[in-house]
Amino acid sequence: MAETTTDHDTIRKWAESKGGKPAAVDRTHSDKDVGLIRIMFPDAPNSHHENLVEISWEEFFEEFDAKDLALLFDEKSLFNKLVGRDTAEKREHGDHAAARHK
Image 1: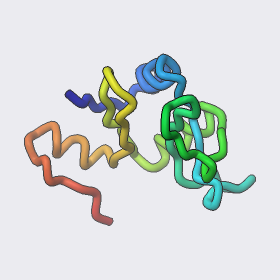
Image 2: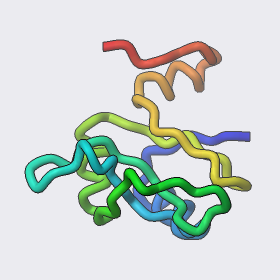
Image 3: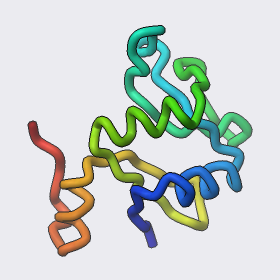
Image 4: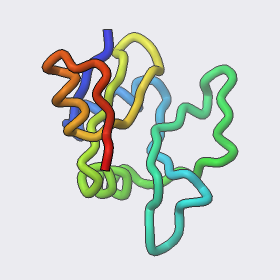
């Protein structure tokens, strides 16, 4: 079952325990802007990360907090999804169709 967290230590430990690294979508990443963030798993079977660039955890969490994100993840697999904290909160209260709309 998927869990949701905003805790930096929890996210980093989970990702690193599975070989995950912080990343940004290459076409959105520049020296001035981190861009869209992801957690990539380069050693995972069928991993297609040619469009991602590794970034530091510091850069990742700066963007994570600035965009008010939460991580939806499965402790037993590589499943993960970055969602808005408002969406995560709604889903925790039973609204499984919740999505971020701005």
